[in-house]
Length: 132
Image (cartoon, rainbow, N blue to C red):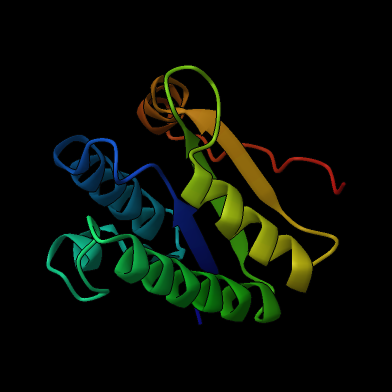
């Protein structure tokens, strides 16, 4: 069975940019032998409600955090793509907190998109961040 990897990335700020990026990262992880878990395309289709509605967005984020917790309980990894200013979006922060709640010795990698592109081009899987 492939190990799970949850992908957290910005969404609300620019879905047209981030959905394709998460798809690219997902395909790359499949090629590395992982089973990526990414919800960006499902958000875009409305599967988690209307992301522009604050109540629906909160419910969708809660659902995403439930998925994150399941990945953490399975021993899966967490990767996050930072915004260009090198910060995590509020949604990514919530997902990371959910992962850390379930998996204190967490295995996470955070990097800007340009860094992920470099790693993918090199065929390298980045080293996990140390446990906090």
